[in-house]
Image (cartoon, rainbow, N blue to C red; front, side):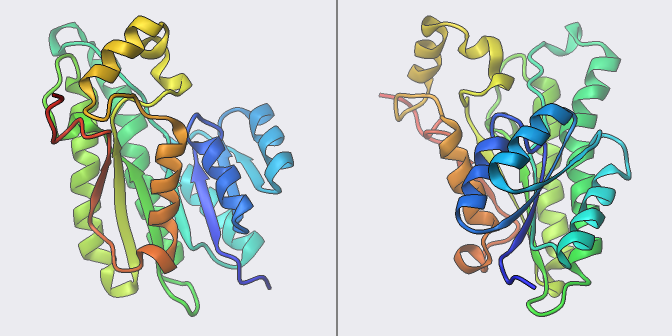
Length: 250
């Protein structure tokens, strides 16, 4: 059996998931993809050699089933990244309870299901034991941004989940971290990057003078998944935001 690491990407065909899958496959990892769009999954699997499975990650047992399929195919799971999420930008008074619940399901519930599935599988890993769980947070969990109430609440929950799960599973060698981006140019960001004027306005809010690109996130995610490079990192939220959350632009 190959000793190449096995990584499961939930939301693996999205604006961050697809380039991460390509990056990990190019580095020699065995990749297992989960997502809703069967056509995109098939195309990306053909490109990267990944195994792919359709699922609705908001279903409580779906990610567990995906991780189980990865173990069945490869004998183990070394890392899981949950890349499912949404960007809901409305003030609290204008957001319906249904829309708030959907924001929690996509951003927080899927993160919890990923931790649960990863812990179940990784506690059973043979030598080397353990593995990595990487979740998606947001600059909005740390910095008060107008109209971000729903996504800020969900992502702050992700950060709390990271710290608690890191404490719970450290004795089994399972590391749990998250990445907190600023604005990144992906389809999910949609209207926020729909015009050059909007991009320029957002770039001016980031001290490094530009919004993020998918590669900025894939570098950080690949680092946190890799046991060799980040084996002493757990319980952390890594801000990858051009300085947005901590530095004032000049």
